[in-house]
Length: 325
Image (tube, rainbow, N blue to C red; front, side):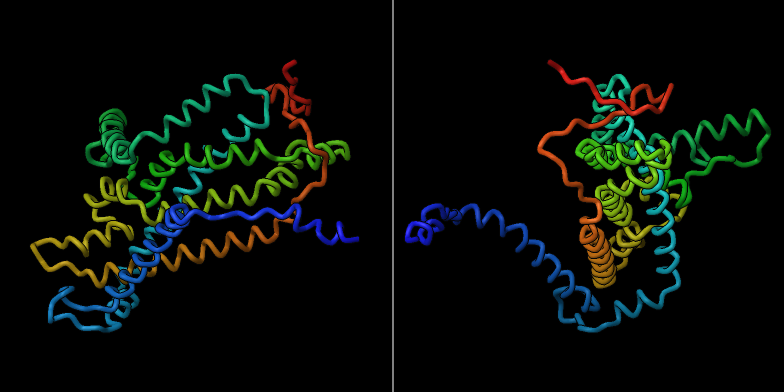
């Protein structure tokens, strides 16, 4: 009896945290809290920051909430962000599924191409599409006008949807990277059960595969929504010349006003505070989805082999991927 009572003390393990490791872990959190605190502090100031003319007031938030131009900017950002997310998922998600859940050849080549896509800066993508499809200088539009007699270029990327399309192409590789691991680690038990009970390929994909991958897909969606709200390069290169403003370019305009006017740091800080609130709401939404993760849990043994779709272009028969000897 005594040995049983002393067993927890015998097998107990104490972990000692190094002060250096603890400092490295807490430093980013402290910096983030400090940054948010400074942002809030500046957002309540009107006038030149750090001078005697500074006045503490709520006027910055009142100006943002009552300015019709700000609502127009928010609408442009919303359209741009949704278009970005849809385009990125429409390209990256099917490629991730084909790579991880089928026997399609050349998987390493696909991974190499999609990884290289992450290395292309957005500014170069924006410049390239400006030369291709800008309504005034794009060579594709100029060719269409000269060949078919159009008075104006029929393709216009200098719109929130057009810029969202370009941004979505840039984020397609990121959508692939974020969702490929979800499909790779997915337990195939429910898919096999659906197949045994007569559910077809598309029914299994809709009712089993996508719900199982929902938490991972939603994480990718939230990450790309955040990028769409905060991105600057593509809206600046394509949109500023056509006077189409997003939240990022609006903040840039207020911080760097034309005609040598004084920068409005209080307005930019207030807008940044509201963007942080949006990011927190998106994080809360994701946490609510994670709480429902028990609905997708599968009880199985230690080892299982993922069922891949053999010859996807020719048939939709589920088979097991052959294992190396």
